[in-house]
Length: 412
Image (cartoon, rainbow, N blue to C red; front, side, top):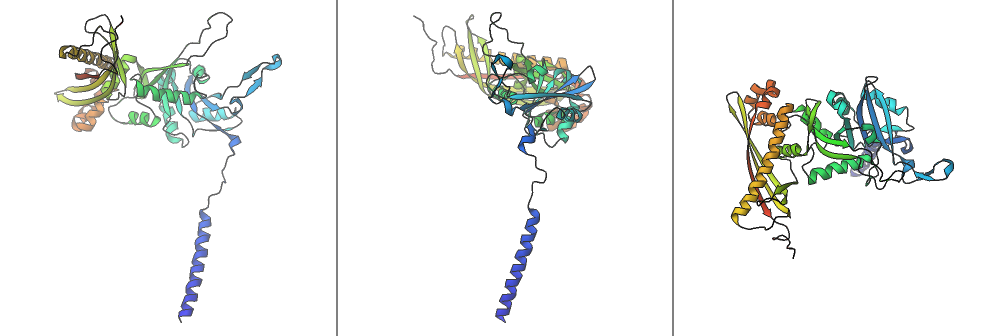
């Protein structure tokens, strides 16, 4: 009896194993939709502009050029060799983004894939008209990753797309690194570092969008007529903010106003300020390495007020004054000068935002999160209320370090 049960169990196990293996074969994924690498063109940078003559949307796409990666090609009968570009830029127009991309593919020997897009550029002209159509495409297209970095370009967009960067092989890599470096080391541009953050800012209540601004530099001039150019300059300058109301560009913040905006967002990693010495004449430089922000809203009838408490710590990076005194009065004077400089930057940002009628600081969003009942009263007319909002600035700034030396160098 036991022997029969053992044989039955063995047969059952074998049947179960066969059924399981048969089921697992159904889960094996084949490459039914594969595309050979030789037929793929990976787009790393994409840009959007307006075609005014035809009333269409213009799209640029930059791809790595496999044929130009350090190779040389003959330059006609002269026998001289010229290096091929490491990138290739395509251009096409259409009534929609998708149509423009499909028109672009008619010019390419490879299928365009947008899974590796690192940088997205908007021309100033397009941004002033509105970026909503482009964002709708990004939200629906599964290929585009939302970690791509967005910029607004002031200047010739096509020229930027075709430019060579001195330290990087690809434009997308150069711009991505440039943004990361500036955001880490200086309060000179926006903290919006991805499409995900950009779309989030556009959808949450009481917070308008700002993007990093790229300024296309003019063509480099040669030293003398007929002389070859020396090392090329970087084709773009990354500085300031492109400020939006809804999805439309309404203006720009300069470097000082940008720093003030970062103070009021609490988004400063590093920042430097040049101050005048207490005894006048010479200058000193303070680098901010730590900051904190506390924003508290309060309502007085129909008036909205905010108290912005900014705490900053810095160190001396340069000191050209005659003497660095450790007396309490001298140190207090330096701290007051630093606090005044911070206040001036924040005030400049507030004045410009009121002028443009755009809340890029997220003050309305703070009301939405902390005093929602009050926000419901102001929400529909916040754009009209914001220019009248009062922000009381309270600055506490301290210089805690003086570098590797205390006294300035003495020249005999």
